[in-house]
Image 1 (spheres, rainbow, N blue to C red):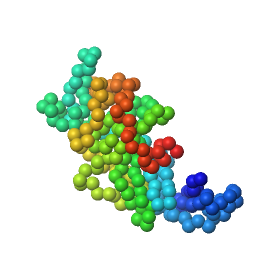
Image 2 (cartoon, one colour):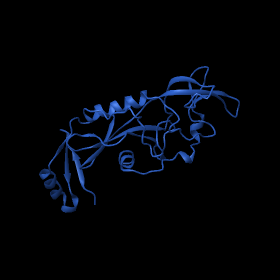
Image 3 (cartoon, helix red, strand yellow):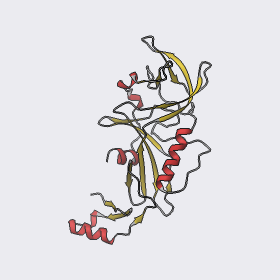
Image 4 (cartoon, rainbow, N blue to C red):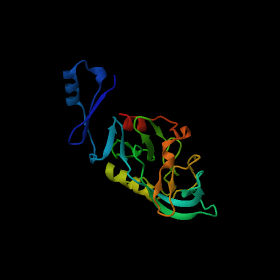
Length: 230
């Protein structure tokens, strides 16, 4: 049986080791005796938060993702002209800074792991998950992410300080403003997922109805499974 953790309204974490209790009264007594861990900033609405005795994950769904990179023209099988990110200057590409809004039924979660010791700092690089509720978790179709969803923040990235939310939002801002390149170029489907109409600069979602299984997330971890499938 797993241990029980309760976060009180004042932001304190109480731990009851269930292996040492046999009934509800024992659980309450164990919680009352527990030494709380104080979080400097209790997460605001809109965040998901999962805590253990020594680590925690803060996550938020992103309603938009910025793509600061190279885009090139492409002709789809039906003859439609579109532009798609190619992440490098291939001789036909131009630099754009476009915003991608996920289609309905698709969620993109930004996740930050924290060491909940005295300093309460980020313990690893942020992660991103492409989550389809009721289906699966996939590798995001963006550059700068590894197969398991960990984000390459670049050699100039310095882990921020501040409250949990301040550190989290600093990481989101860095990711959103970073240049996307070919270092971790995503898998390219027959019809790219990221398409824009060059005449109107509106997003074309036609590829999102047929997700390629090669994009399924390859690594299960505490970060994803605890926060997205509680």
